[in-house]
Length: 187
Image (cartoon, rainbow, N blue to C red; front, side):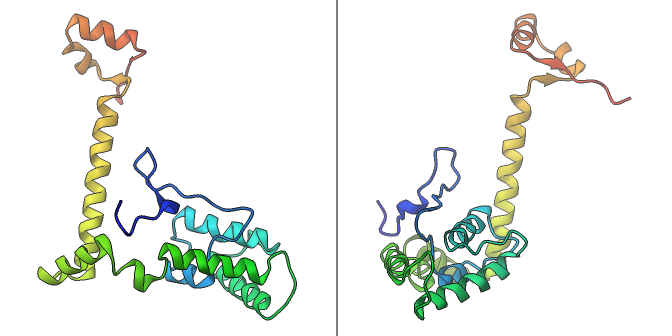
């Protein structure tokens, strides 16, 4: 297991990243959310974390933007640190900070180890800018999506009349037995 492995974000069987939103304790500190650049464009999992944290503090407001929620969360966090009573104690805040420290959630630690270190060396070696890497990742994502679309189309239960005409009798029987149907022409 690599030293940068984090069970909190272990890969799911579907290939995506799984996450666990805590509802009985805080998920993350305001600094963690800031390091992840919480915004409207943030992944749903990131927004789910702060929503759960604010709900735990009885301060959730669905009308607020993620940036506003981060401001409110930081404000409530600081109030608790200064002694104001609420649903969350200073010990709860300390637990979050300890957990983040143990799991290496600090950007200076998180991005200086494992695969990130290799990426940084490759960028340096091949003189790649962050924009080059971003373009590459976008291109890779588009290719993966195109592969998935082709696979879905191949496994689709619909076929054009031309495709059905080109099937042999056994293929045609299997296609219709499995619930396949003919696409309607757009003319």
